[in-house]
Image (cartoon, rainbow, N blue to C red; front, side, top):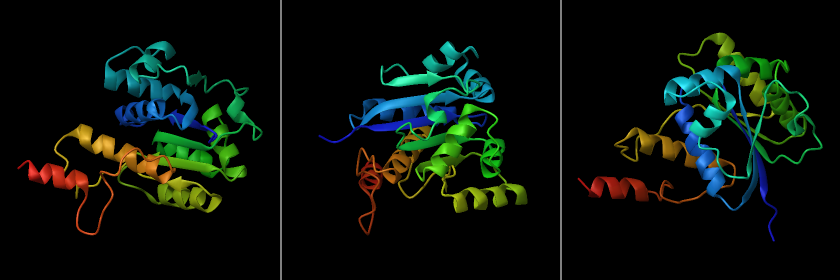
Amino acid sequence: MLTQRNVTVAVTGAGGTGVAKALLAALQRDDRVGHVNLLVSANGRKLVAFEFQTGEDAGSVVRALGATSPKVRSLDPADMSGAVTSGSYPSDAMIILPCAAGVLGRIAHGQTASLIERAADVMLKQRRHLVLCLRETPLNLIHLRNMVAVTEAGATVYPMIPTYYNVPETLAQLRDEFVERVLQFLGLPSTDRYQWDGSETTARRERTGER
């Protein structure tokens, strides 16, 4: 029997929290994932409330993100006693989506102002997967240097940049493909619709065939 994965998802104060909702839905459906730790920063709660037109309290935010499965545990980023604060906790991957530039900078400089940065720091020191889905543009020199620093430390900067060769027709298609690409990167693919076969992909074939 394969060991189920433990994944941490952090949502911070940058636009695109709907993509985080899609990621959480995919993780909750996946039998290969046994446990998901969810951390939403204070600014992340504000963005969720704004984008989903809900309250900023933790309960409203968790419901807006669709984190309803028993496998999801919501942690308070202000509580530094959470399990993910320790390297002895068996965490397979951490995804910060969306990742604000300020969070990127604090991780790059080892500043653990909250449980989110501490959990990221643990992933780096334990040589585990840390994926930072940066949502910022244009990039200044500070951003670029911080991206280099976290990459050198072992993280992967995975900007929230969509692909277009699959001829997306809706925002939902862009969102779902991005989530699948992140999961595929972590070894948790759920479909091969977006895999290039040398000439096109199944998704592209489906969409162009409909025209």
